[in-house]
Picture 1: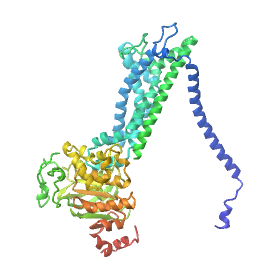
Picture 2: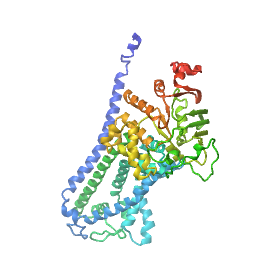
Picture 3: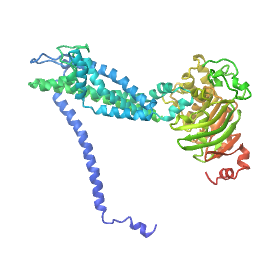
Picture 4: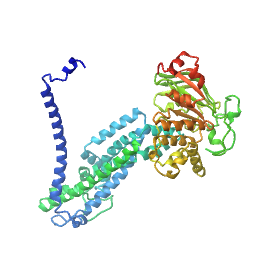
Length: 294
Length: 292
């Protein structure tokens, strides 16, 4: 190595500045990451602190009390949420996965790309708009809100989430597997059903679970669509149904500290459910990733 | 697909006589009498006539005329990008799976033009099997399910699937190694075993021709040797066309070797002659390592 090249190793006057810049970028990005985690911790922590007191077996298994009375629970809201979300998921998941299979396996790019774009736009539609749409579509003709109308609204919110995640995982299935299948003389649709979908199954489940987690806390569409519900646990989706998010909204609006505590407790139930779904979704995703690599 | 024990009409006809448009193409293997009834090995001859292949405007294979004899191993050698993989992918019509890719000319399997418009493209792949560069067993399937995947998903009779799967594993030299773990995941095998699993999977549908596109490029030397030995045994059973960038491998396994350059055929001949006294200067330069 010549003397000239060694000269490049010596500080040319800006070394301190470059090191400082390096530290600045590294620190500011670290702070951003800490902030994001802190927000989650503060939210979960405050919900936990304020809601834990009111949370009890009685709270989970008793219907909401009549207005002005205390000692009620959220069993009707849990049942309503479960029904509304389940029916919505049953509508959105098959259609979402179907759209994803169409765009990744069958559609030519000039159709698949616009469909992707439409899904992204749909994903960005404010859910209050979805609620108004369903209100006009179902609630007005029916004369009253219903769990089913709520399900339709949630399905519309869920559809682009399920479809986009499914597209991503289906696109990750190695082309070599589809090629291997085609080279065996297996028809394309059979390859999709027996090779591509099973390989991507973990990811498809992940997409569905994330969709459920996302809509479980949706409030605006349910306020408009799910109707004004009666007392007690109801399970008929053609009638108005209670739900956890709407319960939280109503209790937090009520002028009583007891109601506020109940809202916090219901929020805790909701957050725990969403957190659990996310963890399960991650597990399925990890499983899917292992298969893709194999 | 039924299994009538009749001879394929095309074999008995001396020339490629026009057939009635009502007769759909069936791979000859599907009409064999049964899984173990080995046919006479005059079947499985492949002939390319004026084959041209394109990727969009890129002319990858140019006016290729070639003959692949039924009981021979033919190796295709040539530098990267010379069109050797594209050429073999035209034989089972996998080339056109790629968007914007197309092929022109004729590929005759025992005299039947696989590019005829009456041909069922999916069925062509049952008559002309393929093994790829990297082992690609189905990750959701067990060892045995991988082997019989082609049979199950193409509607083979339920009763014969088990026998044919076992037989294919034996033929691929894998039976003794995996018989204790047929239900274990296929991707749990070693790389060399996975590749032989893929060979077994291709053999199970009983193709006439087996295309191998650099089948050892992802394998270690020991696994490579096993595959090469296997190729020698399999040529009794299927016509083998192997693409390789490894000239020593071509010299070891092939009866006939084809040298391609820039999408064109430069020279074809008995392997020994091609490697020792080639007719073309470019062949000599390539096999002596002057380029490529």
